[in-house]
Image (tube, rainbow, N blue to C red; front, side, top):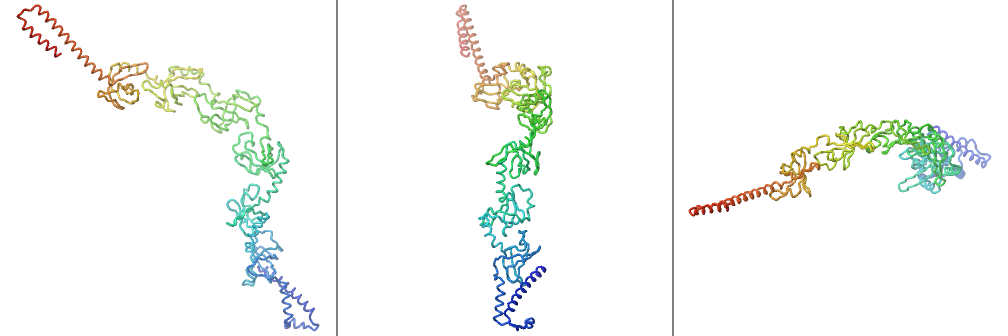
Length: 622
């Protein structure tokens, strides 16, 4: 500060001496020959009023007339790291802090700058100026003018903010979006902080005092011309060098020197690629081949794998169907697994070729991505570049010796795999599936659906009933593990035998009755009428008479009403028999009487009359 004041004072003294010399010259020219130089040097010389006024006018003409609170232009005459000395043509120079010129790193002596006159003289008698206030007063006019005229302006990047940077433009804090910094993606915003760059004003919102600037707009026009020139020279199949500009999940963007191209993830390698980062890195230089391009949309499709031979062309020519190969599972699907036996060479193992089992399963039950497997080549088409593989072929087919291992009548443990309306599919071992028909689940219980009897995944004991090796079918039974209880039931539930039963279900055609020993019977609605005339209901316990027993059909027909109906019918029959017996006895007595009348005498007539009366009375009673 002292250095600047000293320098400013020297310049002021020089100007004063220059003006004094000029005045002295004028005085010399107009002075008389007898001018008293001694008095002038001793400052005792008093000029006449008119001459003094003339000198003052001449001095004032060398200075500018300024007003406070005014924005004027000044010239930088000196500067250091802290301060800048500015001459505005006033009697003294002003000093402005260097921080107010932070946005302008190219400031130098001789530059014209705008300043705001805060005061002609502060407490120290110094001219007080402000560059920051001057810029603020003129900033909005300049910003609007720059937008209208599409001018290129300079701005100082002050700091980083969310989504971009804050830029000082004419004293206004403008927003620079991250996408508008450069045509290339910016990975480190901090390197731009503190830099002075050129911008274009792209948007102004006067209501919210918002200004948006762009540096990218300055170079896009030039790049557009470069793109046209580059695309005009492109040819399919041309190999170019490029730099990895951006990596996405679906591909890699390559900078070809002013124009971008895309390598789709499927064109990075002949093998499977989960993410492009497995193949390339940011800023990596590599050669690419042009696959296709669009002049209008300026899209360029590039390829990397096309620069190397296709792996199928390099596949061992001696490889044939039946050979065993090793590979790695790279992709899983419900219908199978893709196995890479060499980079870019894959084969499909269909789920049906993973196990000898016949029931439906998912490929995920056998393999997962990353598994190392051995497989047999089932089909090989080099022209179509397709290959099918199998892993079950590495194991013996269990159906080859099925008749020896699972003899008819042998008992085994199986796992329930699936249900159908007509039975249960079970697996005795991997590759050996069988069916238990719904009629072979229980001797006594009528099973409407297998879910009533067992659950999927449960263990169940079975007996081999039949083997169809040619069609790979195994007929199994569960009830055959026990003797047929209907042989015993035949002796218990004889026709006309009476048993206590509980009604478990009632429907339109009748009711199901639970009988002893876990067996069930059936009664029609007519046979469910009780003695009082009401209908029997569910969970009611009553006596039932067997009216039909069918061992082959496993059917027992019952009746509750038949019990009291038969009893009533029996009583009626008994009465009829007794009546008939009495009538027969009367007839016999009458005959005897007639016989006796033929032999009797008149003396016996009274006795016979009495006997006749008694017989008639007995007949009436009967």
